[in-house]
Amino acid sequence: MSGDGGERGGARGELAGQTVVVVGGSAGIGLETARQVRAAGGELVLVARNAERLQRAADELHPRSTAVFDAFDTARTERFFEELPGHADHVLVTAGSPAYTPFGELDLTDAGRDFGGRLAMVLAVARGSRGKVRAGGALLFIGGTGGRRPAPGMAVTGALTAALPALIANLALEVAPVRVNLIAAGFVDTPLSASLLGDRIDARREELRKTLPIGRVVGPADVAALAVHLMVNDALTGATYDIDGGQQLLAH
Image 1 (tube, helix red, strand yellow):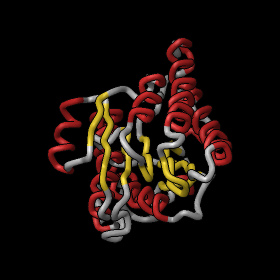
Image 2 (cartoon, one colour):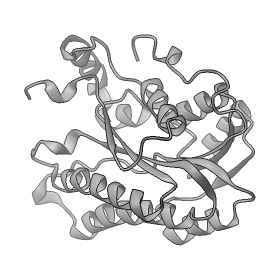
Image 3 (tube, helix red, strand yellow):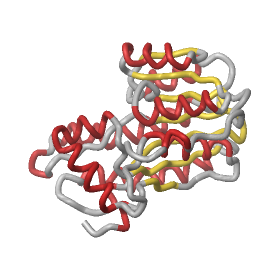
Image 4 (spheres, helix red, strand yellow):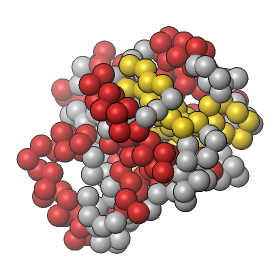
């Protein structure tokens, strides 16, 4: 990542005395958000699928507790929240990745699992966390902006991009006074982005530096700073917040 995104975290102490559950907290946006939560005085509960990466994150951040499971296992996700000792103030969910599969190559079973599984996971977090997240606290989910423009290979991702804001808005009414918001990210320079693009990652970074209005690539620290803001600003609920450095303003 370029720029000084690591300095844009929340003010120290604004999460003092609060506990944040980060699902997907061992890498990328989740890990960086966990770091900013700690810098702002908060406590952490970290969840991830990969036990080794989770242990590395725990060694760095000293969370209150950790758990290893796949958030797409909805029964396990609900049980995790039901068994969570005490209460949490906020939950951030970064689990899930975009699927870019040409229409002719789609496996319909996989497509149904990708679409329905992502929505079911959001519902499981919202339902499982009832009674565990304090009034005025926040449920935050990470989505994307890329599927807003139709393109080959974007059928499933585009459908999810359209569906998630509607789901979030409805959940904000269903689980009030807990707040629910969606962060819609464009390209973010994470290990996931690097794995998806492979040897094209450096060219993509350079292209974005030259074309984005902000003149640099959006990094995990940028998204984490937005997440922390959505936690502490208790006037915000039921909305989708874009963070893409102006990427949507550019002609494809």
